Length: 279
Image (cartoon, rainbow, N blue to C red; front, side, top):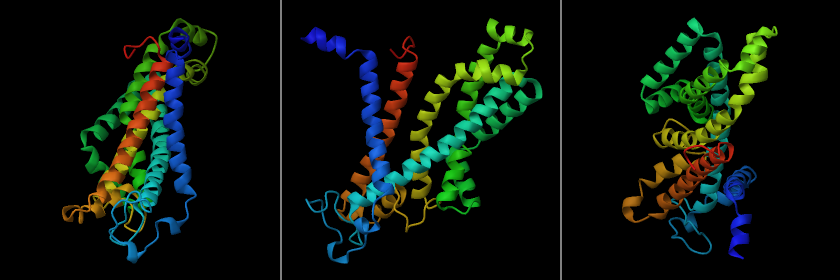
């Protein structure tokens, strides 16, 4: 029986199961937040500072708002920002990485210079500056995250393309009259996609954490918008008075989302590269 179970739950099935469970949780939170009625986390002064109970599992805040529903709504906003910003940032990384590796010369030097400049400035400072210039709010946060998370993935894509560029089948395509663009489209990008996909997934936890960080510092979402950063910022005013639930539960939900995204990325890496050093 045990041997049959071990045979059934092989490495591939275990990896797919972990990715499926983690992905289902994140999609559920995102969907619940997007279609949640504002009445769920509305103001109720008669229930302010209620400790966790059956009616309010995560307690309530200083305005009587249900912390469970407000945290779910805030986390869904963070996940949405993370998805949109990571998509844009990863596209920039793909274009820059492939262009630098194929063109070489001045193009490669320019991309490397952009990467060095972006990585040379403290990340949080750069996020705050861009968000502030864009007027803060959801637009500022998404723009800031999208424009600051591409350098590391760019380097990874560039390194992969440099290796593939010297492959015999790529050189053969040039001899057959293919242009650099055609060779990149037909031969290089498909080979880079597994590494690129893993990099995109691993961008999500960074994007979510940085969105929460700049919002917590007051340079992201406004106080009226349910967001994990806003909730944690507000909780700091009351945590010293014993209202621990205002910070603990939203913080744990944020941590769980980040860990799950990281878990999906690591297991996806194991699935796409079974012979890597991670196994």
